[in-house]
Amino acid sequence: MKKTFFFSLILIVLLAFKSHSQVPPLYEVFARIDKHFTGGITGWDDFCKKNLILTKEIQENNETGVVLISFMLDEKGEIKNPEIIQSIGKHADREALMVLNKSKGKWVIKNITKDKETYPLYIEVSISINPIPGEELKPIKEKIASSFENKKYEEALELCNNVLKHQPYNPDFLPGKGILLYNLGKKEEACTVLKRASDLGFKMGEQYFAEYCQ
Image 1 (tube, rainbow, N blue to C red):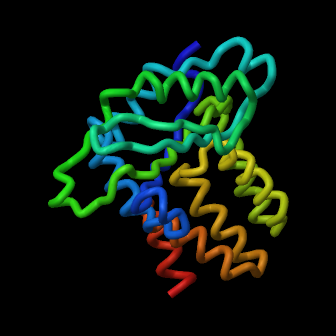
Image 2: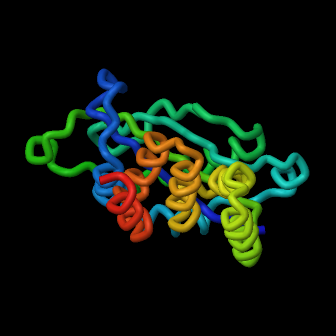
């Protein structure tokens, strides 16, 4: 049942549980993934692919979308107080928590004095369970392109959002959403999306942000 889903993640680290209001820029967020999980971003993605199972119950109950889990990482690298803060269903939530539980021992703490981080660290892990097979993304892209050409921007945006619901950091659809919002006259919202895509290092995001927002 494995390998029938994609994973997306965001690991948000704040300067201790006392400071939840300031989220670091996305490029910094991903830099901290590399820092605190063994193997970095690639290591986390590989770990999820090996350990999260799309169970029969998840499929039967159509539990799709993003499970978001928060926890505290203490000065010994131990996971404390995991909590589901965005649920897509009890079966998917349980599987996501099992993955996090299996990751114990893989979170690392650097030199506390040198890195100037305050522990325990507040961390959020987002796992997207995506039932859309890769081969089905191409026709969706074609539908979006057709709707765009016919200036049916709302229709195209709905299709784009449906993909982003399951793959919120897709390097094609995230910048595409920004362009659709721009054409709907929502420049501020569009530039927010394109800035995020640019910060993530997506080439299309960087190109579109420079072209439409600067």
